[in-house]
Amino acid sequence: MTWSQAFRRQAESDYQIFKRFAGKDSDVAICHRLHVLQMATEKLAKSFLSAAAAEPPKKTHLALVRFLRVLSSNPDIRDRFTFGNNPKQFKAYIDSLIPFAEQIEALAPVGGDIERLNPEYPWLNGRLEIMCPADYSFPEFTKSVLVRLARFIDRFLEVTA
Image (tube, rainbow, N blue to C red; front, side, top):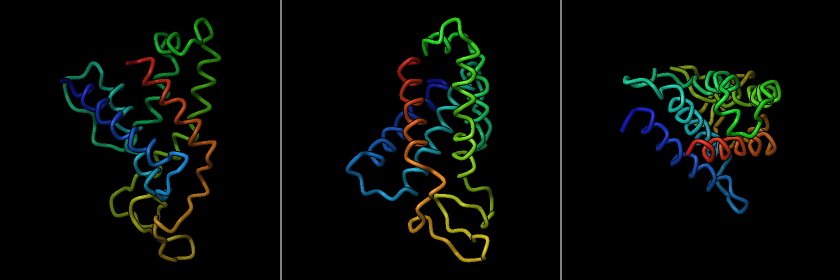
């Protein structure tokens, strides 16, 4: 198994958990959904970005946006997504996902940063109140944003299987 294959396999597993957590009848807190989604997208990105590498990918949580930017100019993936001879339309589609990807990437905790919203650890908000992810509704992430990103991931996994 290569690093790319291992990261893809783990991304698929994480993503399946996200789908269970985000299911119609789920009562799983949004913090857990977002945490698993952040992990799944990071691993999916690392899988794609390390496809030709013999070494493991860099230890960073910031891979999703880079992945999308690389993907936007990939003619093979563009064809698989059925955008064919329309690179501008495919790039526009991928570019429309980047703001959501930036939000997802920003969820990953960084070192001892306790003033940053994240779904995993408590943080201090702007009024220096301690916030608990399990009690926070994460209004920054609307259902439509999560559905849109999930549709992209579903399609990407399908066309690259």
